[in-house]
Length: 565
Image (cartoon, rainbow, N blue to C red):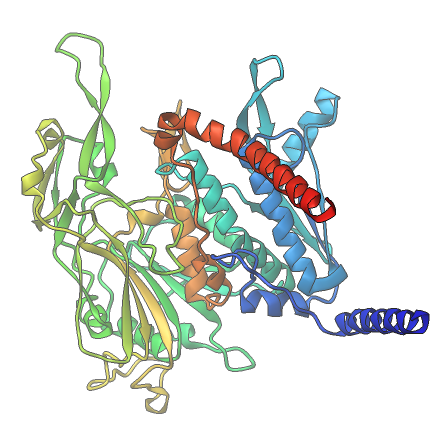
């Protein structure tokens, strides 16, 4: 008997040792959640496994935080633990409370350094133990360090159209994408080159300063002419310009310039078209109460039509729109400005059907035209990115744009259109618009002409103001405001994040954007039922466990008496 016991014990110990040895060679993790929230995407795993040196994540989300931010803190910790499972000891992290320093001057210096490095502060309303409340400044972000370089990651989303709980949920869903994009930036210090086409009255750099600053963290930006240099390649045959941005041109493109852009696309180049077909703008209205919105002749219709879209000669009006201040004071009295809807500035809810637009805040556009998808090229797929609401309409160009319409009642029955398109993603193999009549252009030879592109992509937006920032007059100075910030309502729309995602996607970072398609279900309690059935559930939660324990004790004692009676 004793020999058998020793044998069985030895076998069990041997099995445990074998399991321990095998587990050191084979790695497996099991995610049993319904929304796969603890499963990293395949590109993320591959990136983490390629890391050859230590990456340090300094998370400024520690200390006494409200419940929602504690949930965000726990999600960051869980995500970094997942990163460590694939990146090993090269993934290191620490949580820091920047407010813990008791010295006010030192604390202020820390705040200033974090802000200068790119972390945005947030004010929290914190309840004290005595029932009072106080303001607390936090920096919900992460500094990622690798090879002597730092990248700031702001993890808190603050969408104007969402509740605080929904913003926290969106922040949690975006963690993998935000962190992997920062890691990719550190691992690839050579920045891709983005070209901003010039020479046709495009937006000047000072009106795109905020977007240029954001893009400059990831890319090298250059002003370029539409000439043969666009199709130049590097030593390994790749296009020098990873993508082109055409930002609100006002003058005609020549056929030679269109030919160069066409051949750039045929060589696999990517283009972000931000094209207005009208002369109207918010700035033009600042000089008077009305303006004649004329049709711009950019000579791009045939080029875009060949690629699969047509921008129509109209303006979209939408009931879901921005507001502008209107003086409602009586004559002779001091001005009194009241916000009123301005239907020429739609507020667009991005579609959730593509990683590029998923979990984005609402986007503001001004004087946009409707877009039709055209052509039957089966090699090109078309995805709508931006569309008007279910209550919209169009006004043909030319049109009289008059501020007096602000005071008129908006009749919903007159906004009979739905989902007019303002932004389209085109992907596939495009045919050249000059296939039947190639031009003779300096720098090109007949042998270089391409009739069909390799697999590539472009985005067409019928509004150039989407990338233009507003300004605020401060005395004699004009102060630039962040892109998407509305100086009247003091809200920040999602223009910057949308354009950054668009450039990232065009530049081939779509594998990293795979993590943006993940969705964590927000399983919230039904507050109406909580209020209505509060007593019932209190009894159930408190009484049922006690009754179960009593019943178990009674049954156990009864069976015990019967057995040993």
